[in-house]
Image (cartoon, rainbow over all chains, first blue to last red; front, side, top):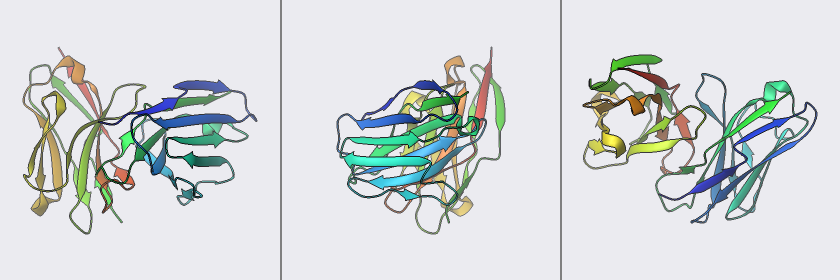
Length: 115
Length: 114
């Protein structure tokens, strides 16, 4: 299957700072990227969907000003957690699709800890 | 709206025993169904998927799943579990395009005992 590389795998940041998570499609053009958040012992919840060159579409209850998503190229999407707080600590996972394959390919996830 | 139910939060099986993880879905049309596995601290790995055709789907690592439309189920099975299968398993249903946003179940944590 296609490869999606997510970086960093783990990050610890201080409360009030911003953190950027990158998601790269290595061997396909990701026309659409999805960002998920996984709470401890919970399932994955879709945060937003982004199409290359367009503004992201956020799911209900997700603060778009706090979770900034950029999808400026067909191989890179970024999620920036702005003014992070301890409650933002979570596991974030991206997935991408080229619009042709009938599945989306997942990154390895990023464990964010805000202290 | 699509939804997925995994009724078993936690399952413990002995190594070498058979395994069945249950999954029920709700979707208005023909569903696109997936099973993913997540090892601790890791991302998701696709085990298998169903879009159409043969209702018995073979996946990686010796897993298979059977789509039963009448029961709205897509249960995952493995005839003989290995210790390395201990992980969290997620059933998921995809949007009409298959590659659109995926709705996940709450997961089943599998423990394998010697």
